[in-house]
Length: 69
Image (cartoon, rainbow, N blue to C red; front, side, top):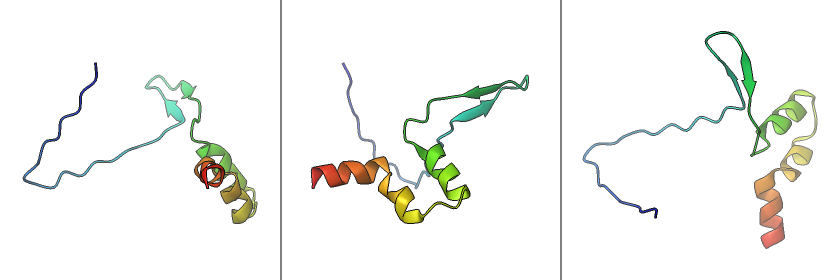
C-alpha cells in the first residue's frame, strides 16, 4: 500500500531531477537505458538540422494532447 504525506518546510528546498539515458561506470563501461521519453531522438533530430516544427510534432506530450483534444 502506498501513501502520501505532505510536510510543510520552513525553508526553501530546491529539488533537481536528472534524466539520463547513458551512464559511464567507474570502470569506464558505458551503460545505456531505454529512453522512455524520447528525448534522445529529438536531440539527434535537432543536431541533424531537422525542423523544430517537425521535432515538436513528434513530442509524445504534444501527440497525447492532440489525441485528448
